[in-house]
Image (cartoon, rainbow, N blue to C red; front, side, top):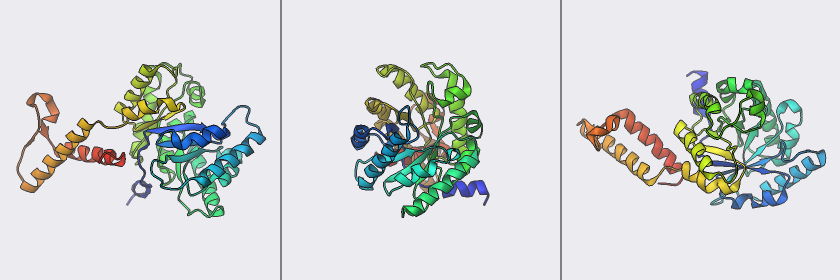
Length: 320
């Protein structure tokens, strides 16, 4: 078996995150409210939760997030998955962040400011050390690389393949953030200026075996729900399964977009039923619906397997 194939098979089984809500790790009220937001995932930010980021603020954030995570009951119904964003390994400060918050309730670590695979490998080594020091089973915490530099965008596949801990990844677009600095685009609500980046990264991470890629963020006005809906729908149509968010008020709309409809689930179930029945009887062709609908009328094995994969996604979201 090739190295690449082993990496894909070794990846941790994870559930899809329709939303990853960023919460400043230094804001006590925001951290305390995280379990009630309804987000699938919450990122408690330790890298730069506020500006200026003094050492006193950072120490407060360490204590606050660490205490919060230790208070959570792992596996509780309705509880989001908790992530932290730490400083890059190249700063020499990442271990301080990790040591303060690596607990049983921590699902994953967002890795910022990557230049290439070597940065991810360095952070993984520090994470292993924090797990051991804090009495957590080695390998328990997954990695979520954030692609914020031109180098990282170019090497997205290599970064994804650098560690079997990488479980989530995607084209994390923002309006004025690091990725804007790296590329120099002019943000628009339509998002055409970042379509290539989002598409390129999607292809890279899917080829690396990342099951549920995540993108983001919406850079428009908070009350422009039509713009947010169009942007989120374009992500889902492209192949993303969720997006990063900074505003909890956007969660219901985003979850609606990244949840398969009852009609879709029923269609996938019927395709699987027809495919399984044909396989059992040895009779065909398999026909479904209106002959005028094109490719979907004569069902082939590829259609059945696509439906089966989509049902796996729906079941992971609790849709049976």
